[in-house]
Length: 148
Image 1: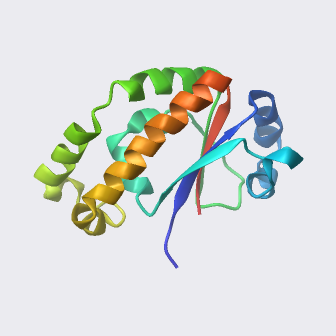
Image 2: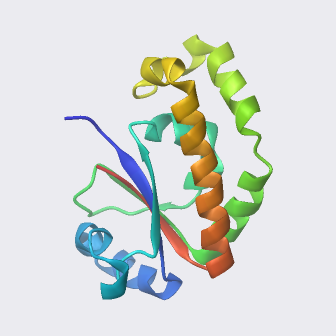
């Protein structure tokens, strides 16, 4: 089994309940939007470690202990707005060039060799993260980054 992750946009007021009871995060993330679940999600699959290293703005929040995932970071609506503004300035081609140009520097990241061979897919994930944050900021959503 491999480790994967996704970003989830949710109503900023709903975030408080998840922080109060982190054991509810997994069930919440798997419930449909019409039943109060996340508004939108953006997977980064097994590229989670590379994405969070190359785009630290996307995970610049608070760790949430007590979930049944391998890791969980939440960003308030204010965090999301700041992250979206910084991510809008990110040049994915430049990030990819840095990742490909210094393979030894990133060798310890999860699935690094796979993503150095699959740069087009990795770039697609990073562009998706930028779009995801822009849309979440426009809605004033909070975000949860969940690793399973």
